[in-house]
Length: 289
Image 1 (spheres, helix red, strand yellow):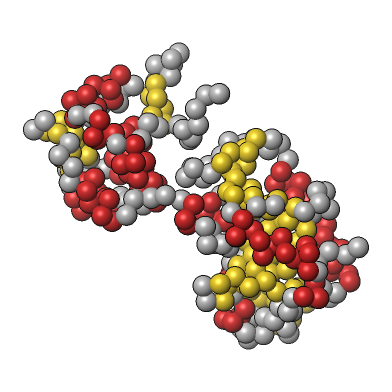
Image 2 (tube, helix red, strand yellow):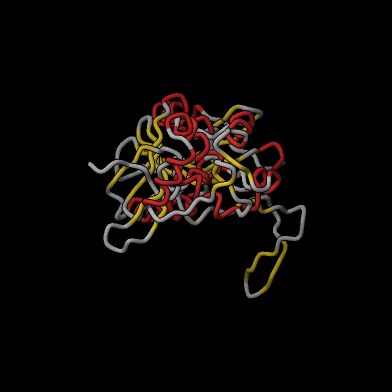
């Protein structure tokens, strides 16, 4: 039985699902494309890791978010069938709001395969988009869009399995699954009595998502309440990391990479190799089983 393809569209703050009508010749090619992408996405990945803020899994790992409310509209397409959904109309791209393309898997019952969609994938007849046919280029006569080269996620029940949080959040509102420090928490951290900030402007400029996540973790764990500046410097030295002191306070440097290393240490993401004696930053804080 032919599979139905759907578009996830953002309308205001809500997601709306539209059916993508396909010609018979295209249907088979599209199904084959998604089957190949499913195999590439899942191949060799035999370990599932609950998402904790790290978005660079190892080669055999998938990150997993459980969100029943977010998954419900996707799963409902398996129940309702295509007739229950309006047809996608891309006559006006600004109104379409496409964020993702998905269909069901033939491999596992109930699994859905999700691609992300970016505005750069739109093909518009209003501009000058050239198409090659019969050894000549002609102008695109109808609106259309290109498909991505890979899946962004698979959905199984209430679980989203993915490799990149950054890609998945371009499709869905999942920021609440990523904890990061607020502006107030960053200010409180910067002004803590344990620190001397070398350059306040450079510190503020370094506050990207990774830095905010690290500060959030440090604050939640109460590291600065349980350990004074001197003991932190001593512990840093034990893993081969030097943190300078000024007037009894730890120096937070202006150099972004160095600052992140210190933040990673405070968040317990720096360790010393027992054989090489080198200092490393870890990709994950999962405890050894």
